[in-house]
Amino acid sequence: MEIEDQYRDFVLSVLVSDLPELFWRRLGERANFVYGEAYSSVDSDAALLPEQKAQKLYQERFFKMEHALVTVARETAVPASAKLIGTNLCHYALVGCGRVEFTQSYVKVSGDMPAAAFHKELAEMAEFKRAPRLDLGDVPSDLIKPKMVSGIVLHSPAGRKFAADDQKLGAIGFFVAYDDFKGWAVKLTLPEIIAAYLPVEKREDRAAPTRKKDGKTGTEE
Image (cartoon, rainbow, N blue to C red; front, side, top):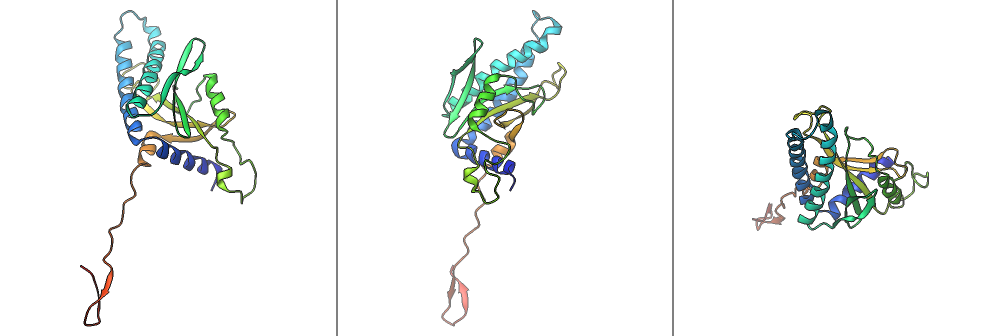
């Protein structure tokens, strides 16, 4: 199995183990609402110049998604705070539970790297490397996997134009960067995360065979 596949399986198992499914479902619902509400608010603001509405929408969406992330976390009993990360007079929401911690970021195109410098610092702490620490095929996978997951809830609009259809929520997922912050070690969509919580379908218990008095084999009722 390739190291990227091991990273993906590991992160998915950590998310399912350490966070409730309800967190992801509510985050998806809240994100859809935020994208629509933020666009309507900026579009109808008569005090904004048309040329400045796109930039205002970026700011509006950022703060509303920060609020959404912390609110959903608190609603689902997941620890969250906007006090731990502060740069340039701005504070950023941080959610953490068990072995996983993450922030959120808006990007114009799904999969783009966010610009905030603190994201790189968090990625360095998690140590998702591009190659195994030991280039040996028989190294136990537990020695390759990082001991913690520091990721980003990455979201983006459907398009680039300042229009209702383009500014709907286009994509949202959980991304983990390599420690050099020059690419993604793990990319998971929200539906993929939620699907991982689905219970494994149990097979019905079959009746145990028993021997009838006439010597023929049957099943117990």
